[in-house]
View 1 (cartoon, rainbow, N blue to C red):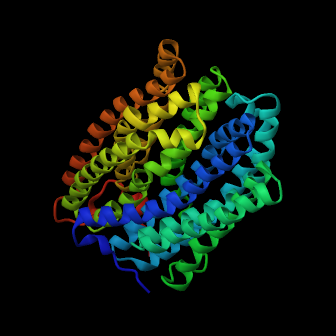
View 2: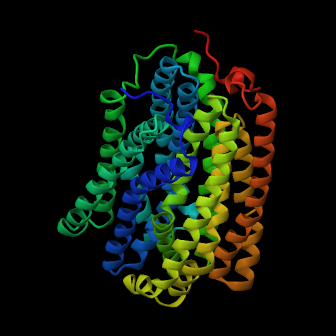
View 3: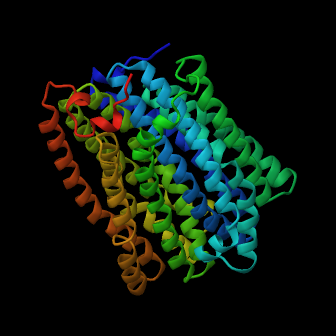
Length: 461
């Protein structure tokens, strides 16, 4: 059993690097399979299939955001309890967050499943593409509670500092998906249906490998008790975190609809970029989940100096990763385009991504890191405001102007410019939160005793 708060000591840049890289391996295992899905579907030679995945992807992003929000709540609550040295509270919070995640996720999935056609049409799908998108989603959406089970389990593993086992949950999910994809898509000639069934099998695998290490290795789950008592602490973080995450797919839905005005080739190009982005920047996507437990444990242990140092190291780490990845993408942009037999506007969008847009992803990373700080320092609604601002005020006017001036590429350029502005706002707000936390807690006083959010995390024992 390993329940110590391992991030209270040691080199923070190393902690961030190890946690981010291991978490990114798990993420990229899944995203690489999604990327291969797109290659397989492109090989079928039907543009409407690739477009259908593009529309469906926006809705799947919307549903997975619910799981991300619950995972953020679990990670924050468990890591803070561990940082304060309360293993019993950590186990109880882990158990009850899992229960709430699955129950609420099932209700959410049912609501989405009953409205698949209107949601797909809202994305801009029509005709045969609409029918294909709905049939694909109808198979995957009911498995959302399983995905949430695995996501929350992995977040709890990261809260314990067990990055390797959290990584392996998604790695095994990716392996299952990769093995089943060609069998179902080509061997059984199921096309999109085969891709959907493979995704469901992968979600079952992620759930299994996300939970079993908690039971067998960490003894991190307990018999359910005081479930209702933990509703408010869970909801206080999960509700704004879910709202925060929902902003991204809603903003992306607007971008998808704007891109649809330029034809299915443009939507297909955006879908390809959508699959490439998490592979190229999986480390940046993973950073928020990796940084959260590090901040949470040190905040719970009263180490505000290490909290500030963790933020500095995270931004330095992001800058190095983005520059390296952008250089690689630029060097291989030709082979990437050839892989999809891209031409016309599809080719133009791919080349745009493998250059300035990739470099601009640094600013998305700043927002991710800021959200991790807000969620783990008792200010989850700051994340909500930043994300909703970024995906409304920071998206709609910029996309409108970009599309009017530069066509399909202008849609992505406008989206990126909005991110630059809101990254600046997020960074300034993060500095303010860190300064306030240091004043509230004092450099040597336990955070859990002095924080204004004490009542949120304290439980009578």
